[in-house]
Image 1: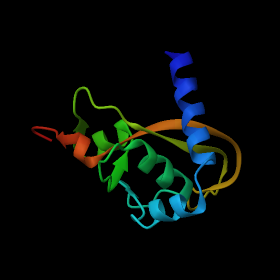
Image 2: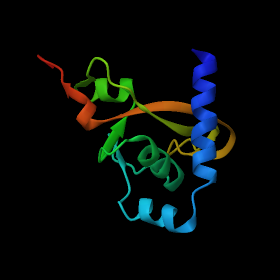
Image 3: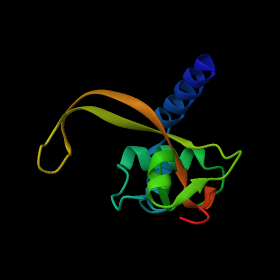
Image 4: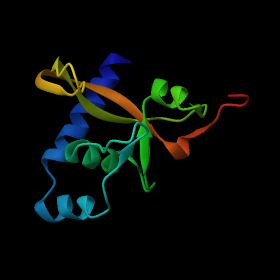
Length: 120
């Protein structure tokens, strides 16, 4: 499982690195992707999601726990999209990352991959 994930990350990085300026602009022109918390994904993560969406049109994304907190659950069998997230020193007032020491991959799901939690 870990080896497979590393291979997927490497393939995605290679795909991203080999995008030409026209391809990159075509992806950007599709529009930015919002998070369930109301922010927009970074340009880099937006491009990464579009490269993985296989024809879907992602609009609002969130992690498993973020969707659960929003009263939705990821549908069984859905596969998420990998994004990069920073880990580092946070601003005490805003919670934003000030300096990113490290980046890790996380998984997000589009709202179309979720459903309302019954009784929530």
